[in-house]
Image 1 (cartoon, protein in one colour):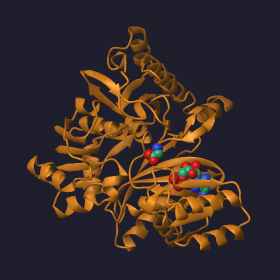
Image 2: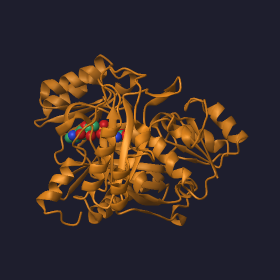
Image 3: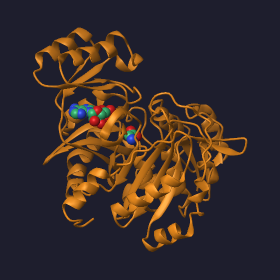
Image 4: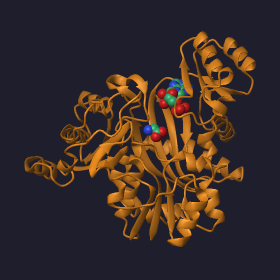
Length: 445
Ligand code: AMP
Ligand code: GLY
């Protein structure tokens, strides 16, 4: 197969890397990619939202499968356009992607499907939203309905914070049209879990769980980012919970989407809150997470291209892959200042020490302990022949090992070797799971 990947971050690098290892793939293109991706894929200088040009390219090159990473082209209908041009593409239509692009839509589907989620109301009118907040006794979460770069959600400690959040979204229009409508929901307590399912419209297969680390600093302090690290699987949430999530969340959601005439194909990413026996959906995304995808792709064992094509064609029951039982961890190396202002064009040194050139004692240690390390590029560029930073999140250092602790050690050992001025990464990725493992004497993990 010839495959076209859409996107340019760590998620797309991880997808391209696994596609590259797929037996069925002999050529990969990427629009637009990054220097890491361009080691394995031919660059295509077409913007992810220039559908006409992408379709012309896919026709001209006889692309067998297009794989879409980010939400923006999905929201804008890339899958609809490719499908009507008779081209195979992996991802949801714009109508199905509303599970991510409209929180009120997602909540309505969940209510209809009986999927557990926080009690809520949707409002198009700011005064009605204010009256609702005043009538509530408990803490609420105010959410701009549309895509707001992860900034549209405010967990409100008290009434005045909620009124401010409503004013920001609806009166001051801080998120533009994304805030014309707000969803106000009850505050949930518990532990967050990301769950991924591959869907073909009717059937779904679990792609595993992961935990993201959204805050910039250790201990979940500081402002939120796109994600500073992830690990998979999440040992405290085992196979039984996974089966319940498939049964109580994923299957009914797919059935409801089907009943509406907008079947969901692609990756359904459920952001969950787990509190004892209680599962609640916080949100859906219609794509892989970044950096969760990097950890999941380390564990993916099979022909990714054949699997994604099967999902795109509604034939997921014919797909065969497995997820390694090993633990994968992804540590994001960010630019100094991120998620605020940061410099670009800072030279990155010593990345080549990891890719095949690690000092021999480290290589031996990794080999003896069945550790694999892979660095994915998020925001990098080549300037004057040198690799430089080109984004807030720069690299995702990913490791997989039979035990989580060994994967974490290896990822940090590798991250320490890569240098760029101002580099920043969290030191506590997977820390919660490691603490639990040591508290239980390392049982099973
Ligand atoms: P979302 O964009 O909807 O995933 O929300 C971003 C973050 O806000 C989530 O990852 C949670 O940490 C938090 N959050 C959202 N909704 C709730 C809720 N109902 N209760 C508690 N925390 C929430
Ligand atoms: N890491 C969270 C996301 O990609 O949405």
